Length: 493
Image (cartoon, one colour):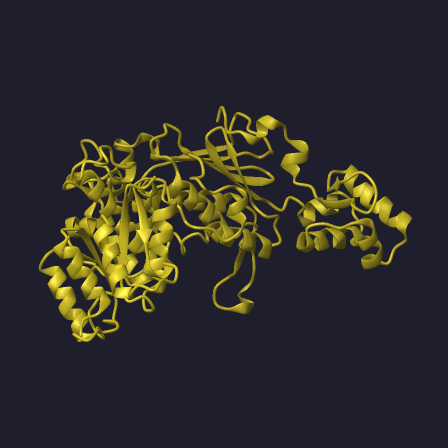
């Protein structure tokens, strides 16, 4: 049961998306929802009370006032004062904790009265600027964690927000901070200048705990993060078959920041998969098509690195088999997310918000909650089966299926053109039944039955259902039909 409320104050229409995002973020974050409920005025039912009375009463009840300032000042009452300024003044007079977030990198185009309000707030407390919703939610997260600790409610900080023992500023790489600032400005129009001092940048990103670098700071910008967090490395393994077997043909352990880990692991996978090199007929550069969309591989690895449980002694493992890519990371889906909900639009509930937000700013992560859906869409567009997701012994597993039915394999199986066309059809439609086969390829029922049964007998198709109209066929995923249960675990690797 939440012990306090957060009052979100802003011009409602201008910052509608930000208001809603903050409420959803607080309600879904595993830590914050234990202590707070977020209040936004638009959620109130119709009432015969005056609006100004209602919102000022809510300010009186709240434990934290959050002010979002954009360009507009808002509706002005008879005294020329907006509800936003009334709420700020009320929170000030009642001694509430006030958190102010200003949208945009400069003050061009802001209403003169809003500029005056920003100056008034700035004379009393620290303000933070934001350019995107993920940047806003991460800043709010850091501020609320600090508030909980300062008030004694939270005695142990979350992993990403707590100081990394024995780490100092000397253990952070200034060039890595400046690389990030340069990239964040280029990719997301980040507010801070490239030459911003590292300590100021870390403060802005909420990466200091009582002036000391947090675990998130070390993982993002450390000269040698694994010195402090040994299991933060990524292990990449390549097997020629569909099972985990020793000796392992190719095995690499990568170290470095979270950005380094993602880059190295993605390069490892892409260097091992099949690629087709085109010609310069389409342009000056020779096109290269990989069997996996690079963006889908990157998304799976980013998910593992950004959302893993860093308190675990296990490492992220990236395993490439003959029929699939598996990415394992320690940790489980945060409630209330389920495996099924990953396949539909869902809220973003990052395990490590202070790690995820800089990764978003550097465009290693796209908009909140869309990564899994993007991965599914990319695999579909490439003619690959949809990725699979599962929990396995405290590990979250993402599986991207390879197209093991290559032209070479199909030729070796001695398939006729009709059977090859059938495989191409199922890749786009997911399945086929006997009647559809007869209609599409204009063959008799005995021929359709014979073709489908032959493809099933050699392991190309899998029959779903026993008899009747509900029976249909799908493409075989080689690892599932030929591998054992042990082949789906990285144990012993």
